[in-house]
Length: 147
Image 1 (cartoon, helix red, strand yellow):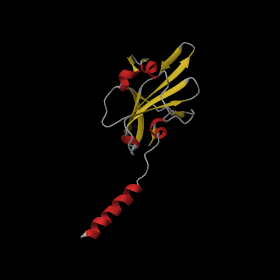
Image 2 (tube, rainbow, N blue to C red):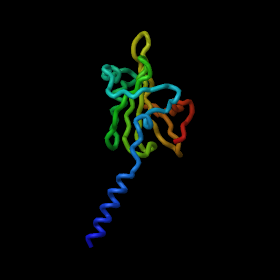
Image 3 (cartoon, rainbow, N blue to C red):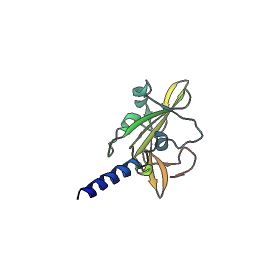
Image 4 (cartoon, helix red, strand yellow):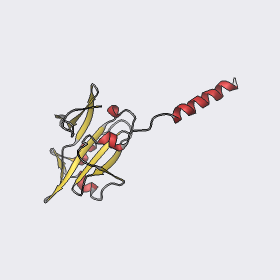
């Protein structure tokens, strides 16, 4: 009777140890291979000001405030001094089932501006971006991206 419990414990430990790692934040958040995004270890100092910017008629903060099932992780990327990307996602193994929301910020001579807030949805193995007002858009790569 004792041997099966030990065997079961060994199987559980081996199975858990061989599970694939979670995808990286880049896997969840970045579709645009043409832009070189650098992962930021910390949020930018002007995060609160960026979240207060208007995007499609509503503040970015309000659009990102929608409750989701499970914990969401917030990460930031930078492409040069004038381009930032904020991304929130559910850190789960299946990229297509993770709720991903992104917004890009760009700085010009008049200051920072927010792009559209995009939420990724999957349909028949394709990840499609949609804005907060449900208008479908092509992914940042220029076409729907097969996942």
